[in-house]
Amino acid sequence: MGGSEAGDRVGRLMASWRAERPDLDLGSIGILTPLARLAQLAASRRAPVLAAHGIDQGHLDVLGALRASGAPYSLPAGELSRRCGVTAGATTQRVQAMERLGLVERVRAAADRRTVHVRATVHGLARLDEVLADVLATDEALLAGVPAGERATLERLLRGWLAATEAGVDPVDESAHDAHERALRP
Image (tube, rainbow, N blue to C red; front, side, top):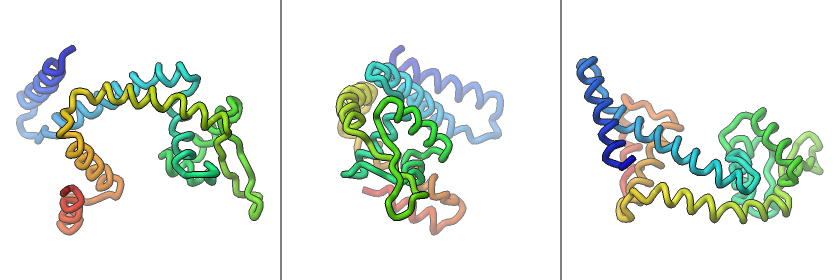
């Protein structure tokens, strides 16, 4: 399917809704529908690449968070949950599965035995290094439709939008809105 056909599909969807509900502001459909579809495409294109390396997206998230934390590539379980954006229960499930694969290990803190750290193993770090180039190449192929000169702008806008959304910026609060607008400027 060509890019214009997908764009036309969103346009047709918006036109249909405008005909049915002309009283509503439907502008979000033109942004969120393609964004949701792109997220689906990114996940579906990454999945076979990750599977070929014997891991899934959750494993990649954990290994990436541990690697990005720097040596000794270890984080308290609660911090790992926060960085991966998942619940403590989801982190526990991921870590248990990854322990069975030899990718991570759980280590109790010496000072407080109740604190559990998750540490990447040598095997886990090697697996991450193996998969990362393939994942990035897959992601780069998905980004091929974004002109090189517009990528920095797109990244800035998306990161600003995400930061404002995660911070719970109230669009009615003018001071928060002004701060958000300043954050979006280059």
